[in-house]
Amino acid sequence: MFNIIIKESKEFLREKTYLFFFILFPILLVFLLGNLLNESDIAESTIGTVRIDYQINTEDAYQTAAIGSFLDTLKKEKGIVLKETKDLEQSKRSAGEDKIAAAVSFSGYPLQIQVFEGTDRVKNRTVEAILRGFIQNNRAATAVMKSAPDQLTGLKVEKADYAVQNKLKIHRSMIDYYAISMVVMIAFFSTIVGANAFMGERQNKTINRLIIAPQNRVSMFLQKICGMVPQSLLQIGIIMVVSVVVFHANYGANWESNLYLFLLFFVITFCMVSIGAVVGLVIKMNPFIVLMPVIWIMMFCGGSYSKEIDIKGISDKMPNYLFQKAAFDVAIFGNYNFANRIILACVLITIAALMVGAFLFYRKEEER
Image (cartoon, rainbow, N blue to C red):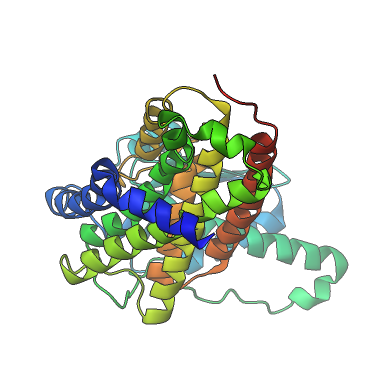
């Protein structure tokens, strides 16, 4: 097995195309995109004043009182300006023109909340968070009212800070954004490396030797894929170290989070390699031609090349978007929950891909 690992590592280091696209290219992109787009893409956003028009149109006395109490609490916030509107259509137009952050309608029974947002994504997330908090509290209070209404006597709504600028321990720049997104990009491009696992054997006409070799095919396939572990560790390590030392990028806030991010990136990369290996056994075309357009489209739609690209209903479904979200949760907020789920999902997908790939290679016939 060690011979295969050494062989794969030497082939990777000898291949100039791989060295450029998988090590030098992402490092250059971290520097170029991080500096050239620093003015158009803003790493940290200040919410500013959130202006909301609202309309209450419900005959339920309890809901009206609950909404009123909630809005009274919000009016005490310095960063939030509330205004009751009699013309909801005009308020919706104002939201569309970004004159206000949103227009909100409270109506019906059971209570229905309609939100008409503007185009400012930061303010939209703020409005969403505010209303989500109200909905959760309202549901809990409604449940208590039905089962034990006496418990609501004297209930007061606690003041909450809805629009406070997050005090990040590290000043974030676009260099930090691309330092993470470029590692994710490399993880995706590793699909091509996995698909090319047996391409060299085909080109050198040695694939049939592997097929007819007395060694167990399943073991041979797994050794071949595991032989790519060192190069995956190498490329991730080089990109992260160069980004930090040369470009002064920030990943995690401490060495523990940086180590965790390295693990996260490696698990994602090896998962992509395993998937690529399956693709390489299925298709006979050059994997680079087949996979490259797909990967670029996914990376573009998922916001890897600019965080300002957000296609509703598409961007947040892209795998690279989810991987980046997991990494940013760890790097910025120290939140490991989503990243843990990503690692678990990648491990399960890797196991499934290796099983499928081993089966396909086991059943593979000699090529003519």
